Image 1 (tube, rainbow, N blue to C red):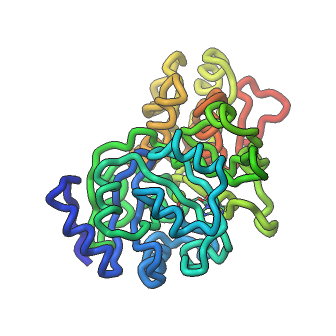
Image 2: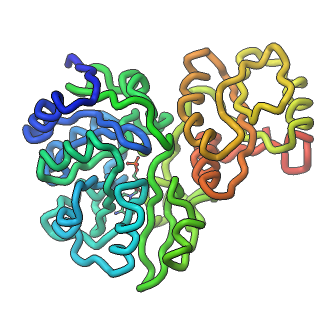
Length: 344
Ligand code: AMP
Ligand code: MG
C-alpha cells in the first residue's frame, strides 16, 4: 500500500473523513503523540488498527470525541465529578474511563465493559471527529512496543506502506500520552497512566490515588486495571538504562563507559566524554516529556546499542516521563556512584 503524507489543513479534512467513514485508517496529530485513527464503532476498522500496530487484542483503545454529546453516546453513566474534570481539562490530555453502552464494540475496548474517552486539543483532529460524526479510536501511531511518535517522520518510519494516509500536524506539544484515570466513588480518582494532567492538578478537584502499576512492574498474569501498562513499551532497539545521580557522579560514570555506540540523555550540566553521543532531553519535565521518545528513536537511528538516561525529577509532569522511561529501560536503574542497588 502506498502511504500518502499530507500537511494538516482544512483542505484534507474531507479526504481524511472519507477514509475513516469507509472503514479505513489514518494517522492523525494530537497534542500528546500521533494517533492511529479508526471509526471506534466499526469493528473491522478497529481490527485494522490492531493489525497495523501489532498491538495485543486485550489492550483497549482510547475513544476520541469532539463534543460532550459524543460522551453520552459512549458512556452508560457520567458522574458529576467527570463533568467537572471535563469542563476543566477538555479539550486536553485527560482520558477518563466510563462503563460503556452495549453498542460500543468490545473489540475497541479490549474486551472490557468500560471505555476510555478523551477530547484531544488539536484543531484539525477536533474538526475531523466532528466531520466524521463518530468517536475516533486512536492508540499511539507506532509499532507496538516502540517509542511513541511525536512527529510525522516517526509515524512514517513505523507505518509507511501499512496505512493509506498520514496527516502531518507538526511536533506534538506534550510528547507523552494522556493521563488515564478511573473513578473511585463520587470524589476520588485513580491515575492508571500519568500524563500532562498531573496528580497535583487533579487534586484541586478530587482525592487522587496513583496506581501501583505506574512505577512498579506489573505481573503479566495478574488482572490489571490498565492493560496497556503490562506490556513492554516505548523501547528502542538499544538497551536503555536509567542513570541515577548528580551531574558529577553521572559524568564520572560515563567516563568509565568504554563501549562503542553509547548514547546519553542528560540535563545539560554533565561533562560528557567524546565517545558518548548526546541526544536532546532537557532540564525541565516539560522539555524531557517533549524530547524523550524522539531522542530514543534518534539513538537507534544513530546506531547506539546502549543509551543512558539521567533519572528525571518525578514531580508534576516528571511522573509521566519517569513512567515511560522505566518501561523503555525495562526497569533497569543504575546508581551512577556504583551504590548497592546498581544493576547492570
Ligand atoms: P495508547 O492507545 O497507546 O495511548 O494506550 C491507551 C491506554 O489507555 C492503555 O494504557 C490502555 O490500557 C488504557 N485504556 C484504554 N481503555 C481502557 C479501559 N477501558 N480501562 C482501562 N484502561 C484503558
Ligand atoms: Mg501506545
